Image 1 (tube, rainbow, N blue to C red):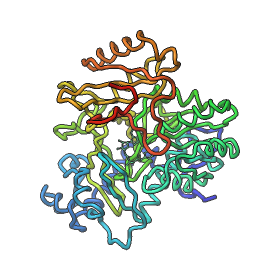
Image 2: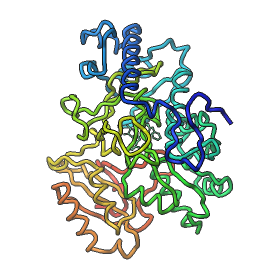
Image 3: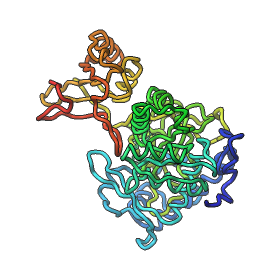
Image 4: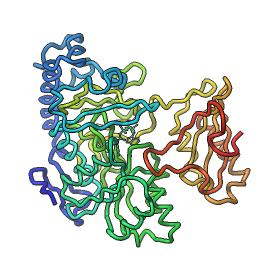
Length: 456
Ligand code: DLL
């Protein structure tokens, strides 16, 4: 197993679970951190100017010819980067290093199936391993941990990101990747991992498969789950915790910034995610004006990668919506906290003139005890006047036949969204599950067969 020497107090053991941190950067005073960030911001701006790429040109156009004297307070006047920039410079036109320094590439299938590619130098991969190890230690993992990694391996950053982090921590990683559920169940029972890393929807899938096989959470033996890569709610968290007998924690990240490990929940962070802001500076912006919003207010997250070499980004607009909180939290970490994501800017649906965020629908549907944590939003766009159908999976076949539950859900949705939408209850197991990749919760029905049998 690897040594984590030089990276702080990794692997302090079960007695201090929750208090352990991997890297001293996580508990720095605000002043110390500001000094580190300011120095790193200046180094980044100098690198971008020297590379003379898109961001260097944008900096000059904004009147920044040198990094001298820049402080964090200057960030709001620095140029922003968007996914369109990456698409327009596809595949790797935004590299800030010579191609021979690129150690690997990753990517994401992204919105509308358009790929985004990102590149890493060897130092970027080491940085990624470090922030991922921070996330794992925050979840209570130690060098003695066995980490069952069911995120997909490949271009997707989930599998290899967790893998690198487990290596930096010095834990044992089981590189399962996604899918082949029966084999996953078998190896979890045989190797007795304490940490499960996978998407939240797959954690539920695994939990349901264990329940179907008659294996109890005690027999499973897992302690904690590190779940992310797709939206999930506290209702899903409760479901995962019940099915698998674990603490289920949130981990956030995106390929453009590094992959998983940009921010993560810790055992003692009270439901907030700590952003690794010594490397990834975060702002919450008004999605329309692009101006920073005050702490506590919902905004679009934008990240500046202070230290990344191959593909540094300035104020990258993620499209992800969350709240930031810079006041100290209850746990040991001092870094800025972000809420669970509440949705995406581009997920916003406009149904009959009303703005609808799928996350709001999810909150209503999954709060109803008659509904299992499976649902699908169907936007029926076959006619000019789109209608929204909320397909929710009932906990039992009897409930699936209940008109009372349908009208209760319809009423709760109307109250929350200010829009009446149709509710369809499916019998247990009827809605499609995702075994590999991210869960699909929203379908546009443009023409042809209905996405769910029987839908009209
Ligand atoms: O999904 C990285 C990742 C892998 C994160 C494993 C966590 C665990 P991408 O494929 O580039 O990277 O997708 C990034 O996924 O902008 C969010 O919209 C969404 N996302 C990621 N984590 C969460 C989360 C990885 N915890 C996009 N909650 C992001 C909600 C998430 N959405």
